[in-house]
Each structure stands twice: as C-alpha cells, then as structure tokens.
Image 1 (spheres, one colour):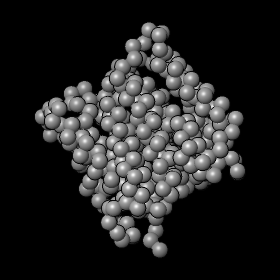
Image 2 (cartoon, rainbow, N blue to C red):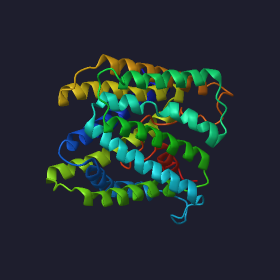
Image 3 (cartoon, one colour):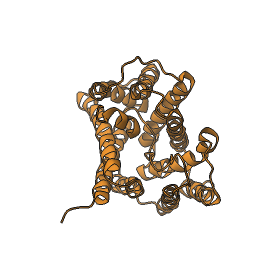
Amino acid sequence: MALTANVRGALLQLAAMGLYATHDVIIKALGETYPAMQILFFASLLSFPLVSIVLMRDPQPGTLRPNSMGWVILRTGCAVVAGMAGFFAFSTLPLTQVYAILFTTPLLITILSIPLLGEKVGLHRWAAVVVGLSGVLIVLRPGAGQDLQAGHAAAMAGAVASALAAVIIRRLGRTERPMVLMMWPMLGNFVATGGALSLGYQPMELIHLAMTGIIAGLGLMGSFLVIMAYRTGEATIVAPMQYSQILWATGYGWFLFGEGIDPATLLGAAVIIGSGIYIVAREARGGVSANRPATTARLRAEVVTAPKSTILQRLWSPRR
C-alpha cells in the first residue's frame, strides 16, 4: 500500500529529528570533556567543506556584502548566541530539559512577529503563548527544590536568539542572497568560538575531533530531510513531528547518560508542545497569519552545523 504524501512527509521529519537528536547527544558526550565553545569551533570548521558543496549550487552571482547590513549583522549575532548557548546547554543539562525550553521558540516567534513583522496576534494565539510559557515554569520549578543553573539561562537565551533570527529572515524575505544568510552566521560562529579557544583549550583526541565532524554532517543531513519533509507533506502535519525530539531525548538520556525520567519536565514539555501545536493549527487557517513564522520554524536553536532549512531550500531549488 502506497504511503500518502503527508505520511511520507511526517516520516521524513521524524527521521530528521532523530538525526538532530543524535547531533545533540554527541555534543553532550563531548561536553563532558571539552569546553562547549571548543566543540562548536571544530564543528563549524568541519562544516565548511560540506556547506561549500551546497553553495556551489547558488545560481545568483554576487558577493557576501548584504543589502540590509544592519539586519544581517543582527541575525548573525543571534545565530552566534543561539549556537553558543545551545551547545553549552546540551553540555550541562539533561537532554529533556534543554528540549523543553527550546520548544518555546515558536511561542517566542509569535511574540516577536508583532513588532518586527506587523503581525496581528489574536486572543487565541495569545492564550496559547501564555499557557506555553507557563510550561517553562513547570520545567524549571523555581523555588521547588530544583537548582537553576547557567545551562537553563543558556537554553532560554538560545530559544530567544533562534526565534529572533527566524523572524529576521522573514523580514528580509528574498532581498538577501541565501549565500549571505548562510555564510555570515557561519563566519560569525567561527570567529567568536575561535576567540573563545584562548580562554580554555583542551587538546582533542583524533576520535573526538572526528566526532565534531559527525556533528557537522548530521546537522546538514537533518536540514535536507526537513526540506524534503516540507516539500512532501503539509506543514500542519509535518511541523508537529519536530516535537518527537523529546522522545529521543528521553531514550538517549536514560540509555547513555543515566538520566531519570522527570515527571515535571515531561508535564511542562507537554504543555509547551500542546501550545505550539495549537499555534501551528491556528496559523494554518486562512487569514490568521500572513507570514506563518511559527509553522515553518524549526523548533531548536539555530547552530552553525544545522543551517536553517529555509535558506538551504532556496539554495537547493531547481535552477531556472
């Protein structure tokens, strides 16, 4: 029996989220030995050859000079913060807690789309945002015995930075070449993390250096699967599959890192996920959202090893 387009799209998205989760597990494993900035530096360095293959398909002639310098610099800064914060959070926190916090990205996109995109957010979506953000309090449980760590602040900073970067891409539209939107964050990450190496460098074994290359490869492969998923199925079917990362996080955390299943974290994640799915469903309705920023956003901090699928799709579109 042939699978429908929506089922194929959902399966592709599930596969992509599995690759992303494995990507994050390697970050966490290396983070037990090496500083997060060092891992990000080598992962970004080893991603250049892979991304160069993609850039060869760019049909638009030109330079790396942006048309909207200020917005591109701001987005580059957001990508750097998101990458650094994401790597640090995965290195220091249980996987399920990091994912639960990063799942707030589409909620934050909804908020930021108001001043930056002129989006009109109605009562239903505002209620979903409020409920979803309350899920973060359930995960963090301030004053209830859980010690808040720098990793929690880093995960939240990564979610905010990733949301702002996504909205800026929507604002820029097609005025910037995909090569500019991809290369500036990559170069920004490379320079920033390279500078951070002077603060604390640990010599890496060859096998661990190879693992940073695997991080780069998994990020790029995951992005291509996301592109294929959205081309195959409807966004309202494909997008919720991104939340399957919490299942990967629970399994990987228990099996590889001895992380127990925290009911409060899972409850908070369920609240956040439910709110995100509701927003996706609302934005899919005609006339509710002119930009649909949350529907097409990947629900994780943007890092250099996983360029935004919207940019890759523009580069990988058939030449005309």
